[in-house]
Amino acid sequence: MTAPAAPVQGTTHAGLQAWVDEVAAMTTPDEVVWVTGSDEEWTRLTDKLVAAGTFVRLNEDKKPNSFYAASDPSDVARVEDRTYICSVDEKDSGPTNNWMDPNEMKDLMRGLYAGCMTGRTMYVIPFVMGHIESENPMFGVELTDSEYVVASMRVMARCGSEVLRRIEELGDDAKYVPALHSLGAPLEPGQQDVTWPCNPEKYIVQFPEERMIWSYGSGYGGNALLGKKCYSLRIASVMARDEGWMAEHMLILKLTSPEQQVYFIAAGFPSACGKTNLAMLKPTIPGWKVETLGDDIAWMRFGKDGRLYAVNPEFGFFGVAPGTNEHTNPNAMATINKGNSVFTNVALTDDGDIWWEGLENMPEHATSWKGEDWTPADGEAGVLSSHANSRYCTPIKQCDILAPEYDDPQGVPISAIFFGGRRKTTVPLVTESRDWTHGTFMGATLSSETTAAATGQVGVVRRDPMAMLPFIGYNAGDYFQHWINIGKDADASKLPKIFYVNWFRRDEEGNFVWPGFGENARVLKWAIERIEGKAAAVETAIGHVPTPESIDTDGLDMDPAELAKALTVDNEEWKAEIPQIEEWFAKFGDNLPTALQVELDGLKARLGVE
Ligand code: SAT
Ligand code: MN
View 1 (spheres, helix red, strand yellow):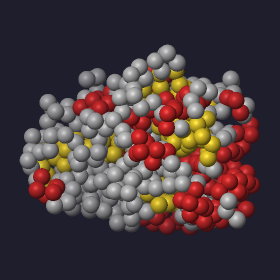
View 2: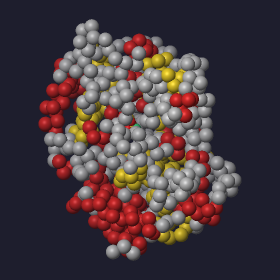
View 3: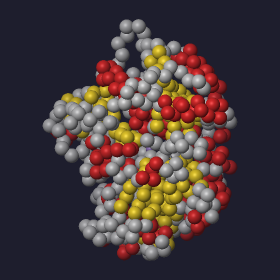
View 4: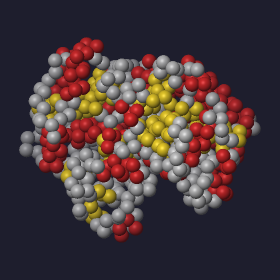
């Protein structure tokens, strides 16, 4: 434990102080507390959360310094229908985002914010996404009335006094994203609080021109930890467009071959499609090693050598709990078992540990995320102990396989980009694009069955371009053009190769045809061997697909017929895909880059579609 830091009651940065005062005057909290990041502060916050019943302290022997939380059953995921990009011009938010005039939205939200922190504390969280020593540190300041948010932000981002000092040193030159969050649950004097305050009315709003975020009504991660999706993707994607870089929903991993060749790979998959598992993969093929740099967000900028370098702006993992176990992700298990973590909407066991569907050692009895008794018999009857989007929030520095390059503010040079989604049919295990533009087409037409990470129906195929559908902070057609431009500006030989994978294809009986998890290293290996010109492929209508022999299947107990099925490109299935892609592209009107229309025409010609 470090000595208690002297409480900081404000800032010498006049602009920041004025904004904090203005928000406090509007929201009328009982007090304003500046977050320092100290251990003493963590203890104070978590004690307060335990006293309020929001947190349950877990058994120190099982999960030291860790906490269980159960949300309001209505506040469990991102709310895409309540998420807005309030650009000045509606056209700039594009056909994939909700839009409202920024002034109208501000009027509406000021009405909601008025007095909304009454009876609560407003915390000021200075934070930086990425490295504080980077050339242009990406600062933010979140104001929130939720201790749960403060505790979680401390895990997910670099927060506190050190960041504030740096903002103060830079003075007027300091650029920071002002991010306002309220649960929308004021407390009248004497009113008993609930364990998960929130408001049925929710707004998650980005003002792209002002680089500003206003969030109201939800305590859930992606809606409330504003450094994450709201800043590092929606606002950062706009900054990236304006400044010539990329803010993407991608993991970053380091792959080392038996010959000690090192490759860095970025991969974009929709939420709850196995990004965290791939980021920490334990290869089943001898001699290959994976280390992780991030599991969710990659910021990529061109280096002086013309290659794309990626950093992970985050400081923790906010991973989907169900399905995580010693087989699917032993490295995540080791990370969370070190403690210092927050578990939300999982089950609480009688011995003060946590459990979720898919985890080893099913308990005889537990308390479900809904606070109800849960036994294996309930499980057999189909009652889940944990919400499908329950999460662990854990410090990245605890990950045993964190690559040392994580700490390099320059980032790492990316050799390959993977896109992928969940598709039962049509999409083969892996396809290599012909070039950057074709890879952009693959990303722009990425499709996946929806998951529980967002509210709404699960299992419906939707287009999720670059796995960024809910996160592009501007017109998605312009975003595609930005991708094309990145390729035009670059030396093609230095650009990452783009691949498209599908771990989720099923056979006629509905079984997954590919075993996945650690075996996915075999696909990474093939991709690297393609980059090195060593592996064979067949050219198909949709791109280059491995020959069955070119995938290393040593030690893999797999029926060759299943592998063939995994690799099949069925032109009839792809013909059926064309009208869906056309319908998708039609949404963008004039904003669809010509290059993507040309790609589609080429695909149609290869498939023999009129
Ligand atoms: O958006 S979250 O950060 O809550 C997680 C996700 O859906 O990717
Ligand atoms: Mn994500």
